[in-house]
Length: 173
Image (cartoon, rainbow, N blue to C red; front, side):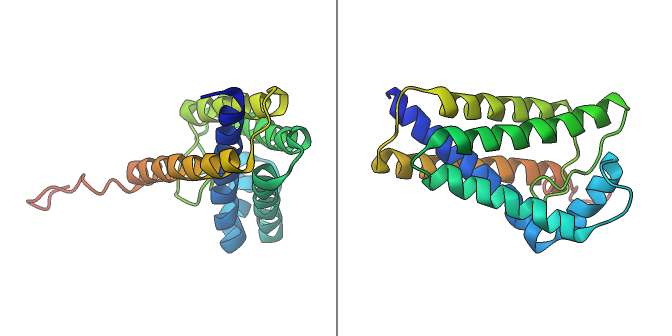
């Protein structure tokens, strides 16, 4: 795997995650609007703001996937991740774990949320400054791999919230 392959993978991962995060916000903006109030970002529930943020995420995801110039799109992804992480860190520092509406799964913020975002920030920085430029084939492969990784992450995080295997056969829990 060369540098351009890794850049293609990074583009695909960022694109898939931003699109998977943004689409639920567009479809159900009220969840994010409530989360923004809980985070202390706004004083009242504003579903239009939730929809707008979802649209921005989707736009950044699509731009990272298809733009021939990676620096501005990956920096846009980085700036969103920095803003999201700052809000989460502020909440955690205040001792609050907030249902973040990150991917529409009911996920609550935790130190793991910060670690996930830091890893994604590293990916965005790598994509912005890496010497290799992915070919179309490398981009497509990266998008497929990024989508697979995103689906795996969403499955695991949804199972952590829903806990489908925690019910006992005898019905007591």
